[in-house]
Each structure stands twice: as C-alpha cells, then as structure tokens.
Length: 211
Image (cartoon, rainbow, N blue to C red; front, side, top):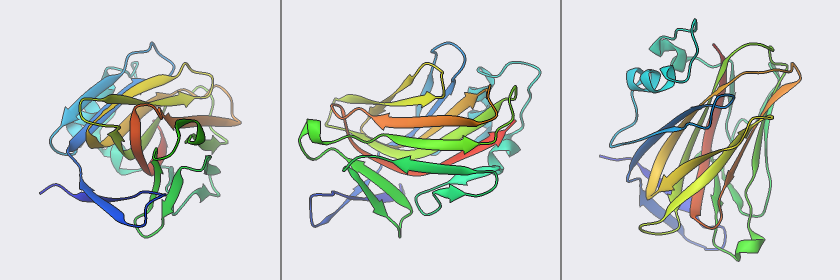
C-alpha cells in the first residue's frame, strides 16, 4: 500500500489528503555536463539501484558502497533547519511556504496569482573541504499543475550551471547531487519550483556527505 501525504493549501481551511502515484529518482554531477538521470519507479529506490545511477556521474578512483546512504555528516529538515557543527542551515523565501511541524514538512503551493507566488530555498553548508567530492541528497514530494503536465524544479549549486528536474503527477522525489567544493567558505544549494507548471512541492530533508 502506498503511503499517503497530507497537503495543506495555504489559502484553504481544510487539509487535502492525497496518495503519491509513485517515486522518482534523479541524479547528476553539478560540475559536470548538463546530463540528468531520471527514473520513475513504483516503489522507493533501493540502495543498489541508487548507487548504480550515481556511478555514471562519479569519476574514478571514487568507489562507493550502498552503505554511503546510511550516514550523513550534515542533515537538515523543517524541524531541524540549523546544525551548529559542521555549520549548516536552510532559508525559505516567499509567501507560498507553510510549515507543518508535526509532519516535518515545508510545503509550497501555487494557489494564488502567479506573480504573487515564489518559492526559492537556500541550503548553506559552511566550512567544507575544497577539492573533495560530496553527495547532497534532497528528499521532497512534488506535483505538476494538472494531468498531462510536466513541470520542473530548478536546482543550483554555487557557481555551477542550474539543472532542471521533471515533475509529473504527484510523486516522491529523491534528488542525488554530486558536488565538488572549490571554496572552504561554503557549498550553497538552491531549489525553486517553476510556478507555471508545479502546483505543489513539499521539502522533507537534505543531507550532505563527503565521499
């Protein structure tokens, strides 16, 4: 049985309960070419398949085991938006965000006028190690604006070119990003849904792990 998710419309008094239609895994190297791997699944992706998708973006001599997904040196969520050591924190901007503390979800919904809604998020990972490789993983739920519509959300990492990730239906998404810090000050990851094609997005968690 598929898990259900509660989605609260910021301008509606009732809770809208929906069941996800499936799961999607995305992977990319933010400092490589613009290739993005996207796989739609009927169940959450397992560690072996997830590792296989990432391997195409990892340069030798880096070799990973599925156990890499079980640990994270940095972990942020709506209930835990700040980590003192190593210093990490998140920011969310715009009127479209709603915090559901009991569910540990930060929800964005496009239910008003287009020009009145925006939803950028920033994830700051400070005091990183330059010339290393790290895995940043974002867990979220997203829905396009309607049947047959393929939406997008954009992810940026510091000075790297932005990546567009597809959204169709109402699905849970795992986004694996390979990043290569070039400055000890920080790795900055940003996330923003396209308001013209994404009707709902819920951020659940982001992790950072040096490989």
